[in-house]
Length: 253
Ligand code: URA
Image 1 (cartoon, rainbow, N blue to C red):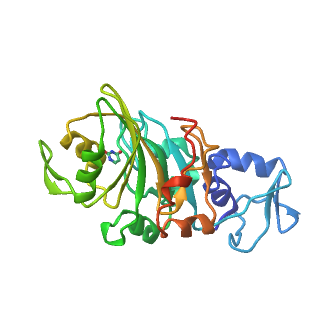
Image 2 (cartoon, rainbow, N blue to C red; image 1 turned 90 degrees about the horizontal axis):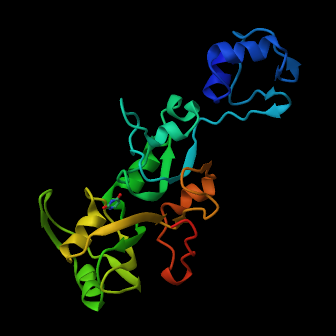
């Protein structure tokens, strides 16, 4: 790959900006100061530094984002801000995509990955990957709701009809005017969690995804913040959801 293309795909600037960095002698390749923006670099093997900082090129990257409300889960949109706009352009350039979809007003764990197979495993209902959400609703919740979620709700509303799979509902607090619960689902139909609560007569007023499989949202990430995931963390996506009793406290909700 050309050196200027590599640097700009790593998010270090536009092609003309990275050429200026190279002209200024700030980039070294294999230990030598680079002078030619068009020189060929082996991105998998060559050491490339900018101001002494090692720029490691990886062809597969996974990002954990704490999606904020008000942002679309989409690769791009002509008018509205998308989750890809929250990341450096490197990720879009290498074909990374959100693995699954959170509604515009939903917050929490979203994985963005350049690994299409991993994205498929997270999304496909065949793989049964559990997703845990924190939901606040505008009315009471009780043991009958827990049973109804467990038995599997029949959803029939303006968006269509389906039988939801059995889901785990843990009530965290309940009152006549507002309740909070954790819900674990293994499928991701359109507005699934909101529609399940609506079928029980309450509306979701706040929704946040806490985990996918055994991977939890890093509590250090405030809404809008992200970090790269390790391969070990990516592997957690294929394991079972964490036991409920050790669910972390949610400081950002
Ligand atoms: N269920 C919903 O209703 N919305 C989401 O964003 C995710 C799950």
